[in-house]
Length: 465
Image (tube, rainbow, N blue to C red):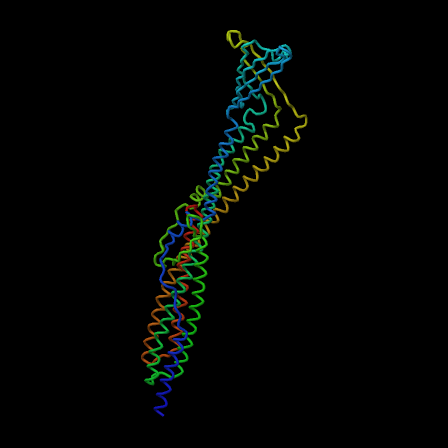
């Protein structure tokens, strides 16, 4: 009987070893660590959506040049010649340079030259042989005093750089927040994978001890099945955690690109949890800081300014169009002493102003909508900051509690292991204590990552990520 029991124990030990060898697998090789600051820096430098958003300031500068181009001097020239037999019927040369000015009343200066000779020249165009020159001024008297389409386009274009900068920073902040979230998911899944691996190794190391106790008669043969069951469970948990870590790595890699625009395929691992800063403090007046730096508010304020400019232009069209022209003329280019003048006035008056009043109403509605949107964005920013403050505070409190929970769970595991070695406990209790420790460690991992999520959410809410 003693020989049969010994053989059974040896067979049990061999069975455990064979099973463990069959289920053995290789883990991923060692990889280079990528810290979160480096990760976010690479995202900012190479993410295609941010590169696309970086063109916004260039487009804004181009719009300014386009608007300024409407104030460039304009050269006009025309020549008409018609002969009849040996005589010139019409020999007319006209040229002018017009210079619009960006100032009150929106005047336009013009310098002209005209030489008109011939037997059949229009008396209005007939000049002396050297030709005549003139210096003139065109000036609106009612509509267009404070602004006009040309000046309004320039004022709107001047707002665009700030709006483009806000648009870029908004895209950047949102992209970096999303990237930080994916990175922290990767950190969490990777830490879970490593933690489940460590507790798996603990069970695998216990196999030899259990085998020796069975052989020595200090444990029952059924313990071999129980330890195998626990190893199988922990291996299943490990594979599940490994799958989560690998998928999180793929999701995080979506934000990584080479500078030439190709996806970055290099393998990295995230930083260890202990490298994170847990001492981040919320600024004393975060709402004021957020209102001064959040790009969403800057952007809608720019839209608000543009709406008001359009409203001012629409109001101008409610006035009658009255334009005065004055010109100082030298009838003979060869003798500038003989000066004449020419004046004129032009009036254009829609009788009902229906189009102008409709445009004014539309512009006024756009201003009111922009004002309301500003209030909504300010309210949302306030909510974002308050939510981030609450999340950070509670996450830190939860982390402090879980530090104590993990410490007490370790004490209980150590105590249960000592009792098991002395024969005062069983393998089931040891496994349960280790499971409780694992659960506490996983919650601690979640708490550390939650603090970091709250920190980056706070930075985003402040517009400082």
